[in-house]
Image (tube, rainbow, N blue to C red; front, side):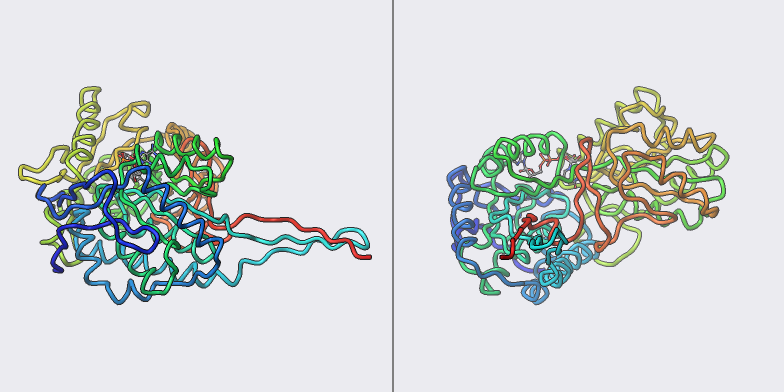
Length: 469
Ligand code: NAD
């Protein structure tokens, strides 16, 4: 494992600098021990970073930088495992996703082309896509390098200059994106990375009138605050605000295969995934069998520090912090007090670190908080249905609507589900988790839809008309 630098700085205008708000401790969530300190940005730092990005936007030149990441892979995944608490093999998966974004959006850069629209004689009409200019990106802690790579690669490949507000709990791997930008020859100010508290540096950045676009992934209340700030400056924002996604499991589903979907759907990244399969809505005739299988999957996982779990297998790391774990435990305890049953798990591990047992809950009613609100942890809620209409009603009983799965061997059932689940934007049959290249529907309560096309993420469409003669 790489030696961890005891102090990490922010990267503003091509220089590594201290933070106006001092320093923040970055801890290993598996032990609670300090890994390092990171400079903490204040509002003046956010101002300087945004001004630098604007200056570079006005100057032009931007290129790709994925190669630097690949050359530093071992160092980056090692830090990622430490700051986020995930097993090494999960850190590799996240890292690969991050590097792939640069390839994916880099290849789209030359395809950001407009349309030609026929008008009456003597007129020519067309559209062009132009960069937003300065893009502010506020990043969550669950996939710190991959989430930054997603928006940064799209914004750079379409000619924007960027300010990244890294997640204060997991800011270390974001430094490698700044290093990659420098190594790839980006001019100072093209990529700025600041770690700061959301209410200080994050809010300052979101509220700046010279920021032209905001990208945010995280909680619904923060998303609303950011959308409000964007509205006040009349600039667009892309929001991804979590989910309470459900799998409908029909009576004819292949439950042997479904065990694998449980393992990946709710226990990958310790359930801290916006599209996690946090609810299973199963036909009542298969309920007991499914619960038995879910319990078996949960109990098969060895839970502990990611640093001791290098190889892919039946293992799970810690949550990102004691606070996030305690929040999840609180939601489970409330569910129990309202009549839900804990099939397995539900408690913190009896050892230091932000560990939560892989959990399966059953016996809840559809309206209960556990069945409608995001837990963002390794907690699967099992509900049951009698007929398709009831399954869809239960599915729709949450405000979230990110992804949805249907498991059946009778494929004619899937379209009914697709047509009826109004809030669900991204649907799969007999599988879970969306692929990078798939258009991504992004929604919380407000139906914000984004799409994994560089021009959608990084540009604004400008219509043009010309009259001949
Ligand atoms: P959060 O939304 O408060 O924080 C996410 C990011 O937003 C961080 O970088 C934070 O510094 C920043 N931020 C916070 N307040 C801000 C503000 N007023 N203006 C600008 N930036 C601000 O999330 P959290 O408190 O870390 O986690 C709470 C819950 O959010 C989780 O339990 C989970 O349900 C959800 N969450 C979802 C995702 C996802 O992938 N959709 C990721 C992280 C958290």
